[in-house]
Amino acid sequence: QVQLVESGGGLVQPGGSLRLSCAASGSIFNINVMEWFRQAPGKQRDLVAVITSVDNTNYADSVKGRFTISRDNAKNTTYLQMNSLKPEDTAVYYCAAHGVLVGGRTFSSWGQGTQVTVSS
Image (cartoon, rainbow, N blue to C red):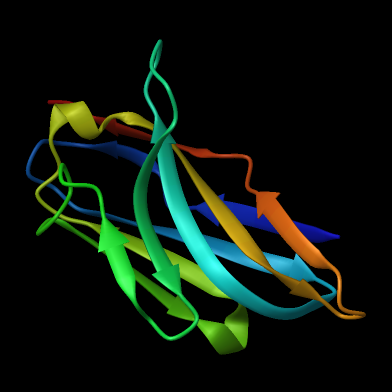
């Protein structure tokens, strides 16, 4: 199967920046789509950003112009550069990957999440 490991979360002041990483490992043939979601306490998990295998991207309106998603296909890794952070960005951030395993089966996997806290 495929394992996703996020890193880069932490505590940052409003207006600051963080860069999240999510590395996928396992019997991966290719990853079609990589996504970042977030979930604040008491709220549903929302899509933040998505990137395809040809680097098409899409963002939630709340993060457009502040967050940038990218990926390194050679490393099966996606990144989320978060700038101009606001207290309302505080949440657990999860990555997800959807693709094809060696052998031809498709997969969808989630990471364990990383906490981002924006506070002074």
